[in-house]
Length: 360
Length: 223
Image 1 (cartoon, chains in turn cyan, yellow):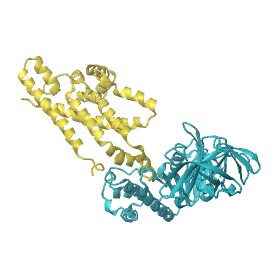
Image 2 (tube, helix red, strand yellow; image 1 turned 180 degrees about the vertical axis):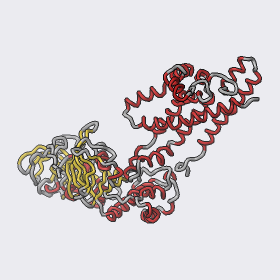
Image 3 (cartoon, one colour; image 1 turned 120 degrees about the vertical axis):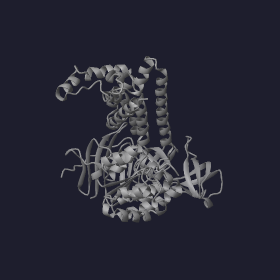
Image 4 (cartoon, chains in turn blue, purple; image 1 turned 120 degrees about the horizontal axis):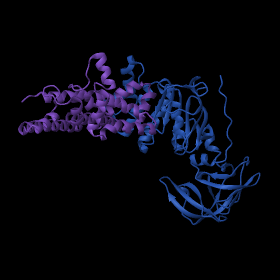
């Protein structure tokens, strides 16, 4: 048991109702902007107060509406790294990091060690306004680490950086979290970043948790339309169940053979790289003839937008192929392997989860 | 030339600015934490002296501080102290008149403060007192400083409320502005003109000082 969160808070557009546990290692909260993921972190850090619920870290209660406990952020020992770093502009990089050190006697030693760890010795005596965005973010990370937090919260810490810097900082964060050996919660809307950094993923939709689990499992079965979108599935169609093993994808006009329980399923999805081209005469489950509508070249792959012969709408299916496996042609035959088809529920209709009881 | 009015004006302006600096910054900080509607009402109440004619401020102050009025009578009875018609009575008058200037500029400066800095500091375990003295005040410094200088300049020029509360006694309560009026009234135009020049010189010096202060690059901005 490490971090336990079970909170409710009324937001402008919907209620936030979040319940999860995070152990050592990183949990990523994946959600579209405005779904309440940043608010969740702020509630854990103590910057915002939930309407009701319970938050505990290693059994230490940070918030409990029933017992009227709401620890100030100063007493929570929760490290919070924000998108913009929030370095104090009137302090140098070194002073900023030193601000985070709790034990005044070790201030200089800890600061020097961290400056080295995040490779900022060269700009240690500059003010935040005089260093780059990547350096600012590294300094902010060092300041959080200097504080020896018992929990690390990362609120889209890379989103203000360009791709190259992002990758560098990501590595630094991964190493630091491993060294810290404490639970960490990352908020992100970037599936690649979340997948690389986290051990577990939680998918949020309009203030509630839809899916939570080990990252591979969540990518394999995102369970909801929103989860499929956030994990990068581009082909999603509403569907009608035909029988226990068949479902009709409305957008593409296709009857698909599928594996798995169809109860409550309203949509189907398939990832672009799971769509396979097959030889013209090939037969087998879910093989269809398609017209190539559009071809988009990526740096290392080709994305094809295909319309099945049966399709009566303007919708297409995207297929991603390595460049050497494709030569331009007006039509092709594809297979949608039954085990690769994602069975999804509409994110809007959901059962309200029963609230856990945390009475001690 | 008797320099008393200059010294008197400067000490009144300096003391009232000092008092209002503390009160105004404190009021602005407390107001910035209030919910929006309460803040709006408080803003209006605290800003009223800015739009009232100084004579009205003087009139209201006399209603409160005059020797036969509640506060004035109480002080007279317990401390044998007259609150009006002394040089320091003017401090009440100028303080009330310049308070809104400082309050408004400090409020604006606090409103521009990036609250995520305070949030970060709090998660780092830094106390709210530390945040106020080491972050909020230094980062709002130029706004507060501009308000202070403006308030000081306005205090130097205060005439209406001052003349009602302190009157004009040469060598005792005379300030530059009341002296200029008296000299003009008694047809001593040459002397009045000298005081006008003194006043112009001080005002120019003050405004120049603001400019110089603002031109100095602030840490964190310069490359």
